[in-house]
Image (cartoon, rainbow, N blue to C red):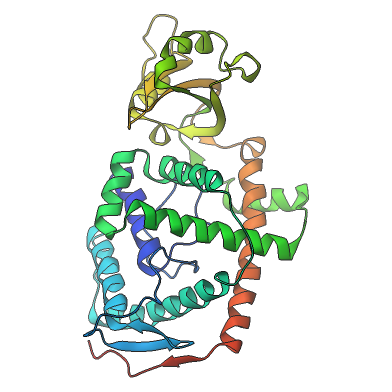
Length: 336
């Protein structure tokens, strides 16, 4: 299977069971067949069921239907098929209970979030959606295929991201500032990164311009995308370390394959965005050959992972509290 399938398969499963708030390193999304953590789906399980839908559980009187469970099981079945793994009736039966548990957790969190006063700015949601599309799908085309496969609209996906951000913000507010020291980071590095070699990679900064300001791109490339030299209408972002599959195809080819070009591999490239609304300038700040990533290279990722572990622990505590307080009724098990 190619890398794009790994990305799409990982994302499909995250929605099939539930979209986890926190996952793998950017660009590393293997097919998972075990139970991922819970978050809030874009399509609420509390929606009124169709007249013929069979209700198999209620969470504070909100229905979960058999169709919801079966749809997610069908998606898992597809992933097993693509991974050339058998999805027997015994496995399906086991996964059915896991999926139902996740849907109950979904609804508990959805109801909890409906009462929170946390507010997320629309611009922040837009930026997070853009980051996810870029890091997990690689292109808007792949992202659109994912939405179509899942039967999701862009608005539903955006609401899903918004709800996850609200949950994360509320958990952060509860936890307060809990610093992670370097010793903890090095322990995580030895456990999850030191033995995992990576491909050749580049440290990249991206500058975005309105499509009408394309003439300014040459000046930006000459300056190496330095923030202090950018025009007022430019937005920039450090993308961090990226392997070839984490960049647009044209940038990937120039940065990794154009060794025979005059002067060697170029350090910048100007591309039109997929939707044609902007011009993106990619500048290489540093290069690393294939091999195990150095500690300094992954510190931001490790720090984030440690923080996510704290958040995940608190999320599980919250779900336990919500289950104790809620009225959860599981009806007769599906006969399928």
